[in-house]
Image (cartoon, rainbow, N blue to C red):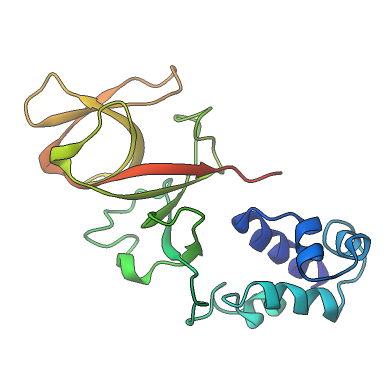
Length: 209
């Protein structure tokens, strides 16, 4: 149980991009104690738990302590920005039609470090490496098909699922060319009629191992 709590604390810190040292300092805690309990195998005491919950009011105590329910409480702290999170590896349908049988408003939500972001995507696979490595998280916002910036990275919500690619003008009419960054993957065209929506990538967050 202690190890599970430790991993959930690390998950919270990784999403926020905050170090254990920063957490201890901002919580007026002992840095050595926090490091031993979160990064090592010392037992996690109530002071560390309270520090995490105080610093992250949107985090559910039931989830943090027991893994029950969702990470975030229904109430978000004032000023916090939460956006839906999806996994780009899942190809079970479009966001518009229903992602894995779940509509976009029912997806889990995460804090975004980018105020304009409207969606977070967890990247899987190496087709967009090294810029967007597997395990990284990109933050994006909706874009109009008529105002695409060719060469930029977009998340495409398509008939065949959700993909992350760089988008270019296609030689075909009413289509776009999708290119991976990894040269091992060939470019391909997608008809505009098969694309529900474009989401332009605003930034990427890479988790530390």
